[in-house]
Image (cartoon, rainbow, N blue to C red; front, side):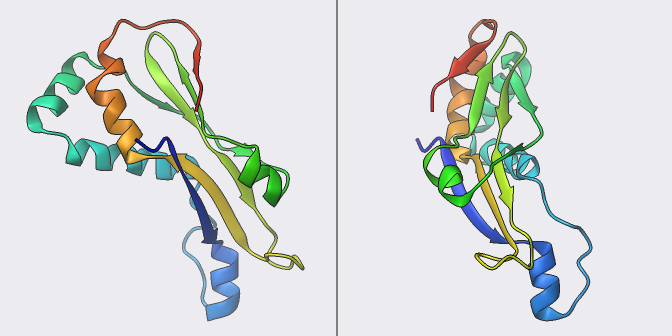
Amino acid sequence: AALELGCKLLAATRIEQQLKVKATQNHLPCSEMNKVAVQLAEQLALPSTLKRYQVRGRKWCFLPDSPSVAGPVWVFHDRLQLHENSSCMSVQSPAMLTDVNAEIYPGIHYCKVLSPARALDWMMTDSLKPGTRNVEVVV
């Protein structure tokens, strides 16, 4: 299963600028997109899998986005961070938001987010195992 999805999005400020409208929200943090990935995985799970996970599985902890410094660093170096502990699998996304007036790639929002397939894999397998302390999951 894919571990992460790399997304290049238009920032709300760029959409405002181009469409001459007012955004209702400044930008959607990558951490919120991770929550949606988990919700999608829950919708895709078989009813028996979902019930077992809800009763016995360790859940997700969503950490604030980790800022990235430059496009190539985000593309080639930064990775979605997964850390397993006794209560949950924490997930932290690298993110970068360029200024709307930047000369290169103005108003772009970069996110690496949790794959729904990886979330479903966690729900079906490792979340059901006894928790360990501070294990970094290599992605």
